Each structure stands twice: as C-alpha cells, then as structure tokens.
Image (cartoon, rainbow, N blue to C red; front, side, top):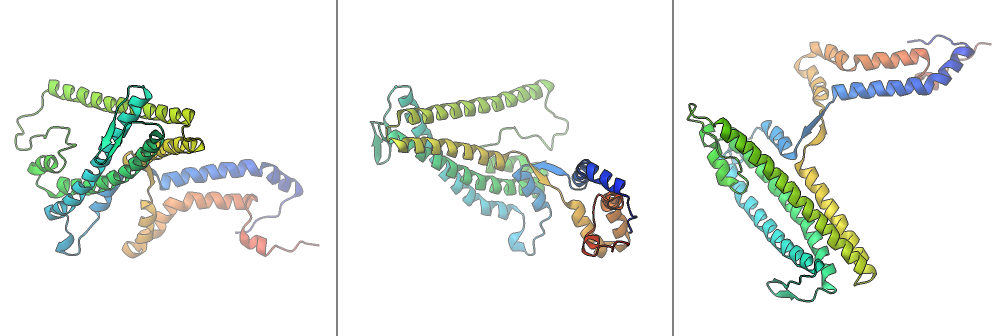
Amino acid sequence: MTVSPRTKFQKLYVLITWPFVMTAYRLRERRRFRKNFPLIWKTPGEITNLDLENYEPEDDDFKLDKKFVDDLLPTRDAARTNANRILFINMMIFAFLLTDYFSIGLTFTIPGVSVVDPKGVKDFLIFYSSMTGLYCFIIQNNMYTLDSAMKFVIMNKFPLELRGIYIAKYFYFENFPPPSPTQLPHISYSRIYSQFFMVASVAFLIAILIYFSCYAALYMAIAVDIWKNARLGIWSYVIAGASIANGVLSTSYLILTRIRMPYRDYTVLHEIQGLPQIAPSQYERRQKEVYGEGVADWLSLVERGYIKRKSDSKNPKPSES
C-alpha cells in the first residue's frame, strides 16, 4: 500500500488532530477486543466445573466416579477439622478480647494455657488471631476446590435420583435446601412453601452479612483500642496495624476465592488457531470476521498519515530535489 504525498497544510492538520484521532482509534480497538474476547463472570468453583467438563481420563485409575469422590473425602474432612479447630480458638480469643474491651472480664483458657491478666497479652492474641484466620481461609479455599470437584462428579456422574441424597451425605454441613423429588413428577412444592423458603433464604443471607459486619466492626474497634493504649509502645502500633492489614487481606482473599470474578474468554482465538487443521477452507473467512474491521481501520490511518509503518520509517523515500 502506497501513501500519496501530502502538502505542508495536510501534515499540519495531521499533527494537530493526531491525539484525538488516535484516542478514538484506541477506543475502537478496545471495543473490538471486548467484542472478540468478552469477559465472563464465574466463581472459581464454576471454572473448576467448566474445566472438568473437558477432562477425559486416560485410564480407569483417574475416572470421575464414586471412587474419585470417596478418595477426596478423607482429605476434605481432615482440612475441615483443622479449619474448625482454628475457628474455635479464634472465636475464644475474640470473646476474650471483646469482654476486655467492654471491661467485663473473662478468663481465656485453652489446653495448657490460661490468661487472666490481658495486659501485654492482648496485643499478641489479636495478632495471632489475624494470622491464623488468614491461614484458615487458605485451608477453606482448598476445601472449596475439593468440594467443587466432588459436586461436579455427583451432579454429572451419579444417577439423577440419588444426587440429592449423596449431596446430603458428603455436604451435610452446607446442605441448606431440601432435596427435590425426582420419581414423583405428580408432586411438587406448593406456592406457599416456595415463597416461605425464598423469604427464609434471603433472611438467612442477610443475617450472615449482619453477623460478619458486626464482627468486622468489633474487630476494628479492638485493634484501634490496642493502638490507642499502646501497652507495648511502638510494637502495639505495629501489631494493631498488622492485625488490621491481615483482616483486610483475609476478606480480600475470601472475595477472590468465592465471589464471581471476571475472566477473559479467548475461545475465538483458539478457534482460529485450530481451523487450519480442522477446516482450512473456513480459516480466512473466520479470521476476516474477527480481525477484518481492525485491519481496515489501521490501514485507513496509515493511508491518512496518522500511523507510520515500520518499513517506511526504516527506508524513507528520498526527497525530490
């Protein structure tokens, strides 16, 4: 493609309008990129399910069946036991710190340790609680990964009639909804039952949010109190700041590992890369559909003088005398 010579006025016009034209071009490129490679919002558990849908075992040792679920069960239960133990100790510490904050007074006792006077120990306890809390979230994330794999197998490989029963067996601590009948098509939930269950579910979620908000607010109040009293001098400031930072990190980690997060979907790119082997005749057509508009836009800017090709910059055309 050749670029026709331009007058000084045209060059000046390009120079003045260059920032606006290129900004508009980059916005168009960004729009095309989002169209070709959209964002999908998924939880890590949903991503695990999508990944396992494409899994094909090479032998019988790694099949997604009941044996696979039973093999993961002891590890999941051991992790849950460790996490619950940490949660129990942290709740005891929190109760001790809270009663001290409100000047109620409480003796904190765990096997082998008894704390009566909180002076100097209070700072250590909140820091210990914040560190073990973050470690507990990591353990729970591993549990979540194992649970996601187990649920995928149950919901896709187990008989439809038995899925609700096995969900209750393996996830009895989180099986909130009642099982739906599969062999009784003539019996369904009444409208009153469904509405009541919906209201109860929403109330349950609201209660969890309220409890968590109260816990976070009281935890911050205790950390600020340690900062203000500074029983250990500068170390109290360090401990209070680190405890608050650990709490923020724990909450952020919980959000990243549980809530729907954006993932970039490059399915179109993989499709184009595979077309030469699968359907060579469709390769150029599909590539033009995806990249044709962007290429035409770029060539238009080159022709108008807003973009200089590398070949032109490396081998400039000699000026006419």
